[in-house]
Image 1 (tube, rainbow, N blue to C red):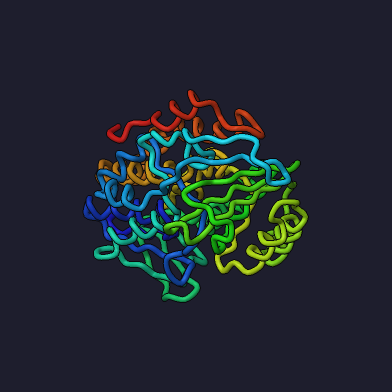
Image 2 (cartoon, rainbow, N blue to C red):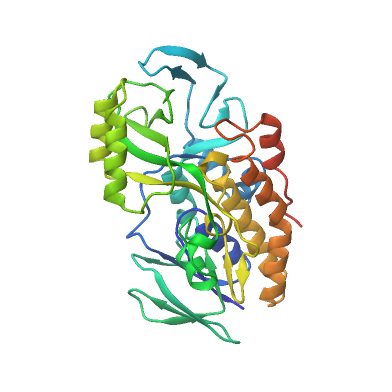
Length: 366
C-alpha cells in the first residue's frame, strides 16, 4: 500500500500528497487543467486548518499573501452606502481574527510549490476508468498510459470524476441549495483600495474586493435559481444578462464578466454521502463532502481532511480498509457541523458561535 494516485491538483489533493510523502508513500497527482488554475474567490483558512498549514510549513507564507482589507460598505441597489464596517467583512469575518483569507490561486500555488519536488504531477489529463482487484487499482487516463496503484483518492471537486466512476452518478449525492455563484476578475475600474463593497437586489447580489495591490478586482456574483444545465457558455450569458440589468455599475460588471478569462460559475450545492470510500478508492474534500462556498469552510475542510487521511493511512500498517474507516470516524462530525453552516440559516450568515465551534471540532492527532 505504498503507491497512491490523487485526482485533483487544487488544494486538498496536493495537501494530501504532502502528508503521504512524509510517511514514505509514492504519490502521483493528476490534474485536468494544463497547469495551476488561476482565478477564483478568496478562501479562508480557519481554526484547526491553521495548524495543518503550520505543520506543512506554510503558515507564514500564507500570512504574507493574505488579503489586507480595511473594511466594507453595504450598498443599496442604486449604489448608495447604507452601512459600513471596519471590524469585519462578509468574505473573511472579523478583521482582528487569527484566520487567514487569501486568494484561492495563491493557496494552490503554495501547496504545489511545497510538493513539486517529490510528487509526480500529470497536468492536462484525467482519469477515465478504474478497475480494482485484490492487488490494486488499474487506472486508465485520457492521455497517459494505463497504470496500477495501490490506492486512488478523488480530490477532484464537486463534480468529481473519481466519485462518479467508483460510486455512481452525481445526482445521487448532490443537493442543490437554491442558488448559483459566479466569480471573475476585472480591472479595478471602481478604484477600490483595500475595501470591499456588497450589494443585493432581490434574489441577486454581489461582493467586490480589490486584490493584487488594488490593481485588480474579484467579483463574486450570486443569484437564486433552481438547477441549470452545466453549459459554460449558457451560464456566462445568464450572468452577463443579470448583471446588465442592475442599476449600479451593471453594464461595466456585465462587460467584465463577458470578457473575463477566468470566468467561473457553478451551483451552490453540497455533497452528502453515507460512505467516502469504496474498496481501494476514497474521496477527499468537495468530492466527498462539499459544504458549498456558503459555509466558508470548503478550504479548511479539504486541508483538515488531507491531514487526517494521510495520518490514518500511515497508522494502518497497510490495511486501507481500517485506514479509511478511521478517516471517516474522525471527520464525520466535523463535516456535518461545517455543512450545517450553509443550511442552518438560509439566506443569512451562520451564527458566530456555530462558526467558532465548527471550525475547531476535530483533533489532528486522533
